Amino acid sequence: WFMNHIKLSQNELIQNFSEYILQRFGGPNYYKVKKGIPNLIQIHCNMNITSQMAEKWLYYMSDTLDDLLDVIDDAERDILMNY
Image (cartoon, rainbow, N blue to C red; front, side, top):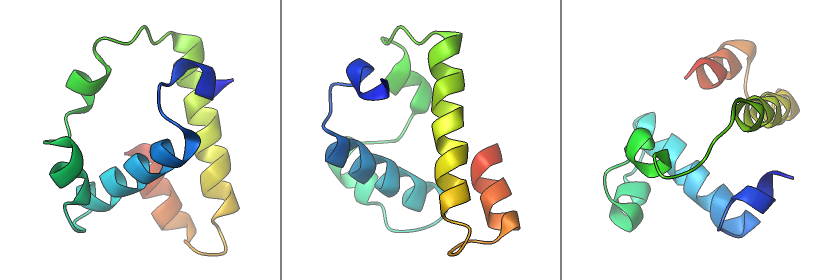
């Protein structure tokens, strides 16, 4: 469902998101080197994002973080979810 609204492959989407999150939390600036300054408002301003799409994205994000609980603890999960 979600991928029907994105013009990237699933692998590209995962790579971009991973690099973005790593950079935002103090890691290497891989995202900036490839894509420029990460400005979420500017990146998404031309997309027609409905509240249903946003809620679905949050559901997927929450579900993914739940799958990572053997790697991250609850506090780290909350930081990422509330970001």
